[in-house]
Length: 326
Ligand code: UT7
Image (tube, rainbow, N blue to C red; front, side):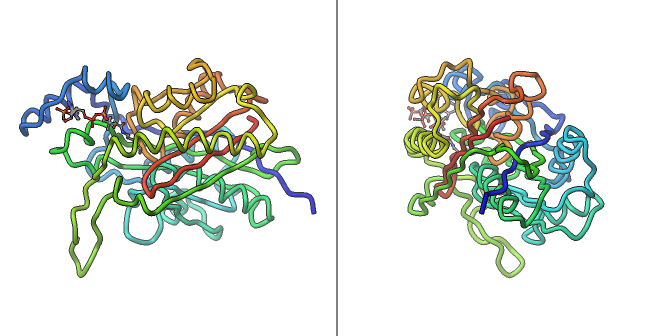
């Protein structure tokens, strides 16, 4: 049986309007006795600013705006969609899924809608699952969204983590196609590293047990990330029969410029081929890849026919890639 293919028909993204510069954040942290500086943050991470939501704004609100932009780019309305997959670690509620809430906000009903939880690799997981469902005929037009309000998970007494993350959402419309589209995918997880990046809390009996704030062993995550990103890139390139030199754009998870530079070096890619948004977005977890992708499409850098490699890495520990022809 010939496999059906899928292609990205439109991209969209949304950043909450409140931009918080390093200087602003450092001043706020100083009031709590936490010392940091613009120069430390820029030098160690490449981050200059991040966006934070205001009170009451939920992951589904950001997702809705990104989804509407992606639908518009694809020339479609929401009733054309027959699958909604949302990647998030900051869902509106314990249940129902944020995908179901987005479906309601889009004013449609009936199609399957569910969340995927793979932290910063979430969008790569969600896109892979949607591609597989399109390939096996379960759906023909999917909305795949990464959305996060990570500011709500941050421990503002921990300078090693609270300066790194931001809020936002990105989305794509994925549709069946005669030609690929998505060329190869690769997903991985190793739960033995669950503790190096986690939010160790859960709901119990009307309260929260544990501390529902982000905790990270930054050095351990850094080392693992650099290793696995090289591996997963090779895996998808091999599956597609392509070489690193065939890549027009690398769109990596936006956690730290030094991780991206190291990945590019391993693939012998110039940084001119790497889409970098971490400077203005910070790390938006599952939203970071579709946010960067949308920026690259909208500013004309990613053009039809380009070979694009998306790479994610994050809590779980999880990592993976999607290689596609734009
Ligand atoms: O999205 C999931 C993936 N997450 C990641 O990819 C994160 C991976 N890790 C990293 O990006 C880096 O490890 C960090 C940016 C988190 C930290 O950078 P680092 O170069 O590994 O710094 P470090 O943790 O080794 O800390 C170096 C020093 C320490 O001081 P001492 O012990 O040398 O005196 C820290 O206390 O920097 C200090 N430090 C800070 N100083 C000013 C840590 N955070 C800050 C801060 N401002 N915000």
